Amino acid sequence: MFVAIVNDGAIADTGKLKDLFPNTSFPANGPNDEWMTENNVKIIKSRKTYDSATQKLNVVAPYIEGDVVYDVEVVDLTAEEIAEKTDAEVARKEASIRKRRDELLKETDFYALSDVTMSDEMAAYRQALRDITDHANFPDLSNGDMEGNGSDWPTKPE
Image (tube, rainbow, N blue to C red; front, side, top):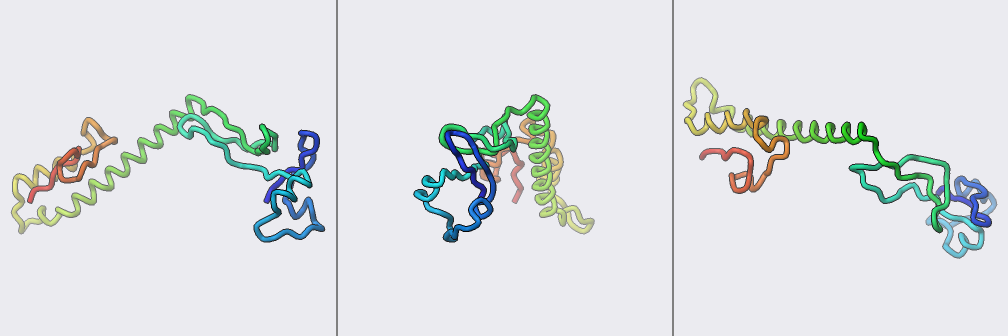
């Protein structure tokens, strides 16, 4: 447990609790609130609420904000970082759609064998799967119920 010793509203020292208080025995779940208050000790928080779409956390030297000691600060992403993040998310979605499309094509691959007659409906379905990356909503396809109801995916023929 990383903590800060706070005296007169300023951080006097930081470190692991057992290193700062080597002659003190603590229970497994750490000291109680009363001991922490008596010894001016505050746990250093490494998490803050932020919008991951437009912000990030940077590790910094411990500081006091309100009555809490943090070792992270919230920083706005640059336009370049937001673009990179957006591009990465689009690439992830595209890969996921292609993987699902490939799985659906595999399920019907046997129809493409030379000794099997493929129906026009099955051929159209398979072509629609191959063309899914040209769909107007790609890569943000709606799954609906995957049976055509509210779905951007083609419906597999019977």
